[in-house]
Amino acid sequence: MPTFEFTTEEAEARWTALHVACQDFVEDLKPILAEKKYDVGLDQAVLYDVMVSANHDIERYKSWHQDNPKQQKSDAIKRAAYFTKWLTRLRPIWVSRPTGYFPERRDRSVFLNERFALEWALANLSFELDRKCPTPTPDKLFQLLYDLHYRELSDDALLHIFQLYYDLARGTQIFLDLDRV
Image 1 (cartoon, rainbow, N blue to C red):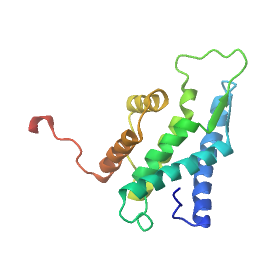
Image 2: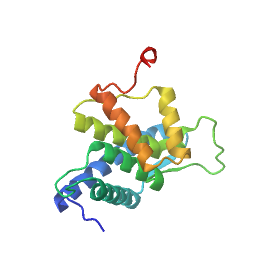
Image 3: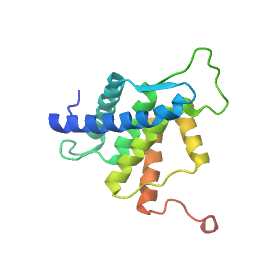
Image 4: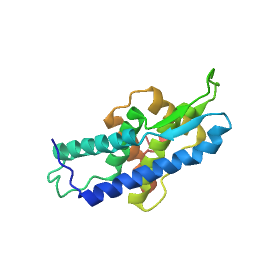
């Protein structure tokens, strides 16, 4: 089993950052969802499992793909992908709806874990780049949230998606003009 390359203090700081960000996300939603008589909360034990699982995946990735995994740190792309994977799989944010609830056609409360996962991923990328990552248009955001919720996206697909965001934020040209193809 891999061992994490950070100290207890670093692990606690990482947990605190994730926990505070997720708790703030949930607290911001409470008044909005209360209008629909929904309750929303955070299962801290599940969020802790997210952190442990994501870090195990990162360690496995490092041990297989890096020459010196103890010295080389993971980058924001790996953190974005693996935290997205586990946030959307384990779903630490819960919503309780009233008895007799019938889903509205455009009820997006089912996407709360995906929304937080994307916000956490883009925050990690932005922090490493020291600049804000691009925000998807509303239509593209919905498509991405929908895919994260209903589709099975592999680890490699998530790595590729966040690599594109990272490169785009850095100003790296990622597509050729159609006229030049």
